[in-house]
Image 1: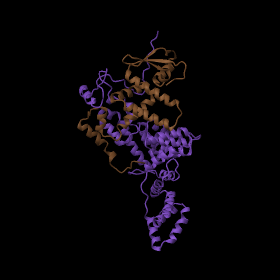
Image 2: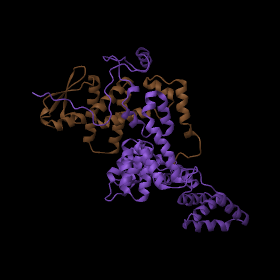
Image 3: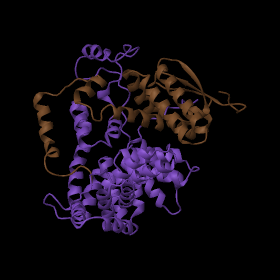
Image 4: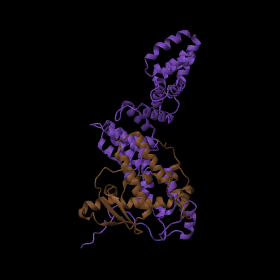
Length: 334
Length: 170
């Protein structure tokens, strides 16, 4: 009877077998005593346990795929075998830099999207999810959605939050719409800390796209994104507090977030904040915000603004306009 | 947890340290390597599958993981389930020492259990990101085998990344 052989993992993934021999660097004894500080029990039956320096290189590459350069460098400096495994990713970083320069036309480079895409694709081929996402962005802007989505999928699978966010958003725009998938990936990205994804996820939950309208979850993610600096999330968070939607009613919190959004350039927030200041009797401050709102196209603000202006002296009017002229939005994460 | 199935097929696995584990087919099929094997050899299901690269301690952890995740997936998707899965995964990793984590990664790779491997990879990544080189070395029990010259070479080679005016986020 034929002996059924166990499948050989020679499917191109360059998997190296479970290392049972002593690692070549350092002497085993020293290593063991160093490790025992952080390990509860010593290695059991094996002559020498598995060694992280001998981690299969496709695994280490996968782990480091979404790293930015500082983290990649840290990993490369850990030991020589890691340095060697991570070389392609470091090369990808160089290509990423070139790509960005071509894309934005700086650092002495003339803007050239073809070359940018080429650089990004080369970086993606070396395994960097950052390059994959940037390549995807160019494809998307050109209307080559399928190519973009393929790249986002690769990046998302490797745990890159930007890739996951972009994938989620592309599923929202897909024909036919893939809401469930979209929410799944936006959720991954949100948990991974991606601020825009958090806002998008909140929107989906708010609109009841996949599950029933879940206001509490939505508000939770609006707040998260707001705390992360996303201006539209700040505005929505304020509304949640005002109407007690998903968050407990709180006028104080509502005012706080509306002001933050206003200070970062949100025109509707500037209008609302201006109105609130007006009702509190802060005429000068109110009129500045209302002027800013008007300039951004909030026509509704004009009426109240004019009401206040009529009550002000000429000097105060001029001063208010000067303040509006010199106003600068605070930084935000968009 | 009671299973509704009348007769669940069991697969026998033998570990490196010669322990035999009987697992339900559904769980064994989570191991893509095993699934592929059975797809190609449909009449081999009665045989014991040898796993020379996996210890019994490792396999029992893996079986526990797959069982739990199968149970999670059987339930309706919701954000609270996601929360529970996340908590489970965190606890799973926290409960293991470095030695076990390394073994688990190698075993999950060998058995090709995507979800587990991804989760473990993420755990490792979190232990590297935004940490010092020293911390990473200590955590993974790795020796610095760089000579000072070699280390300087690598730093010099990559200095370009820290000069110049390219912004980070665009």
